[in-house]
Image 1: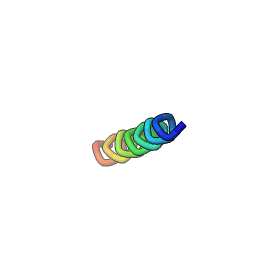
Image 2: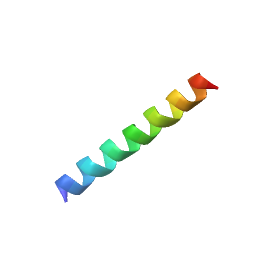
Image 3: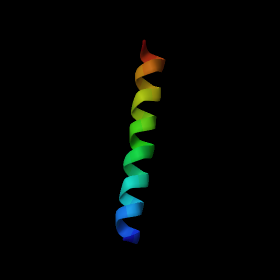
Length: 26
C-alpha cells in the first residue's frame, strides 16, 4: 500500500511537472 501511494504521488508530481513545462513552452 505504501509503495502504491508513493508511485501515485510520483506520478502526480511528474504529471504536474510535465504540464508546467508544456505551458512554459507555449
